[in-house]
Length: 246
Image (cartoon, rainbow, N blue to C red; front, top):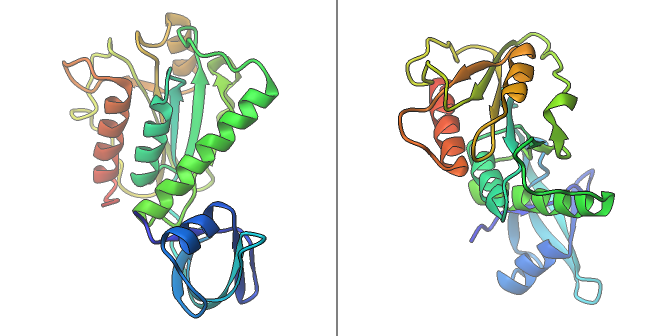
């Protein structure tokens, strides 16, 4: 269980925590006034502070900041992954955050079986995914909370340039002739990386054509057929190794 906390409520030399963090820090970890805790704001800052006030009625507590550190921002790593059924995306988000992904876009594809057909369902699901990501940065001591985009159709993807950075785009496709492990892509230096993973059964031919038109290169991960969550972790681990992330 992580002892780190998370909050965006930071003003000058103090921070406040409520709801889940109150439950975790005060009720589970039994923190008390004058105890010190470590926490993140998700924007690259890590802090240490001393608890100065606990309000059990409002389920809230306050911390006076005693130490702070700004961490160097990671190079962009954008994960685009077909929205899977069940709770598989929860696991994918958890592992992706641990491996330093900076942005996640769930993809709606021709072979996607889940349909989020109301704004309320989308909002609820995105809030759930964000909570998974927050728990993961706390567990992995990653001070950067990735941005999670709404589920998006491939035809609606808008690829924006990364100022001052080279861009490498890869779509993982079972029919690809070249493998990521063998391809001569240079991931060192200042480069942004965008990865696209299809659903079980892969992207449709039209979707592959669209992604190629957006600048993606098709690559494979090997001879074996991997589950989506296994493929994502394998690719992210290899790319971050090649980028000297570890």
